Image (tube, rainbow, N blue to C red; front, side, top):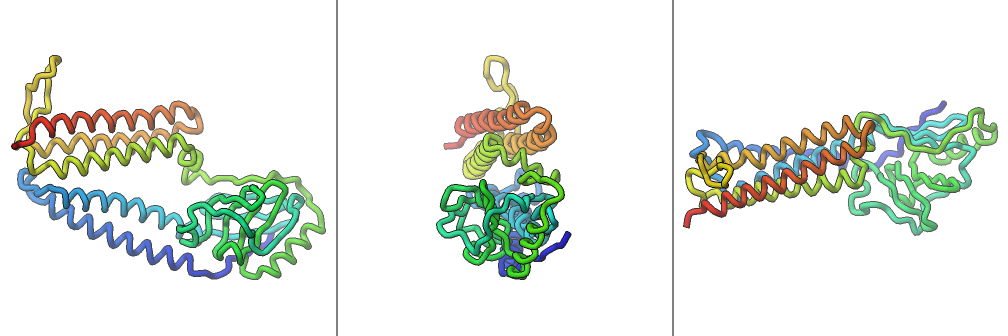
Length: 309
């Protein structure tokens, strides 16, 4: 088996530069939040500006994680050839392309549609697009599509960018002419480290995204309303709904942070459960969404009823 490295490109440098910027931004936001929440809770100065810093910090951390993933992906991307197949490896994943199923090899794919085109080239060209005739087009390249080798089979296409394209094609054709010794199945074998099956489930990803957005919206609402809240808020009620206990107003933030903690816990449990019971894993994420709604209603009710005139 022979290993082929990538063509050098700006993608990894772009990802590294953006990663540094995102980390710097997250650190700046975190520093601002630490200052705001220093001292006793009664002295905290929470307002709309803090809401902006809080949401910015969370979003920048998410962007940082995505950029780190893109950079790690391109740094581990490589191509391998033997008599039976072309193997594309990245981050513990492997795409298998049987040589006996390859029909043509071209430069570029005119008319192809790429996913998230404005984000392509960060780290590498990635994801699944469509060729002009509708076949899935898998992107594993450091160069733009018009300069890539595109390997076609009857059902799909693969965009790659080995360092020496002419030598790569020559090596591939020589191996094809020898004939396969083992029959392979064209497939993408996901690694276990990132739980792709769980995150790739559209129901799961959409529910989690909606739950996170609701949680962030609740935090922003509470930060904005905080200066006008009474020093003590009713947070204990009897079975008739009458207030029987008051707590300092800063404790109202326990609800959204508890909701965020439950969201993360259910996501972790869902990852563990998904391969055993998909329905159970999905119901866990749905329960996270319902909790955000219930906590949101409770916080809005308390804050609206106790704001000072």
